[in-house]
Image 1 (cartoon, helix red, strand yellow):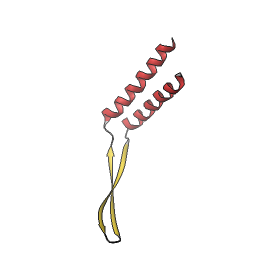
Image 2: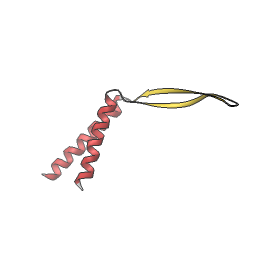
Image 3: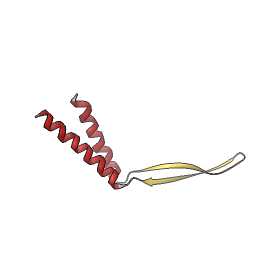
Image 4: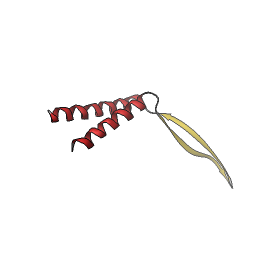
Amino acid sequence: MRMPMLAGAVALIVVGAFLLFGGSFTTRRNVLDVGGLTVTAEEQHPVRPWIAGVMLLAGLGMVVTEVRRKA
């Protein structure tokens, strides 16, 4: 039962670190839709650093919990 929690902790740490150092996501929206003509715009939104920090801390907390439970 320890492996799934440890794998989730490592995933949180990796994703949190990626987002902390320049992670962003892109959204698309229709700007103009006239007849058969559709104009779309792509917008990039950076992920807030505090969200990435929370993910890192949660992952580290899960690893510490597993290490203490194992000992």
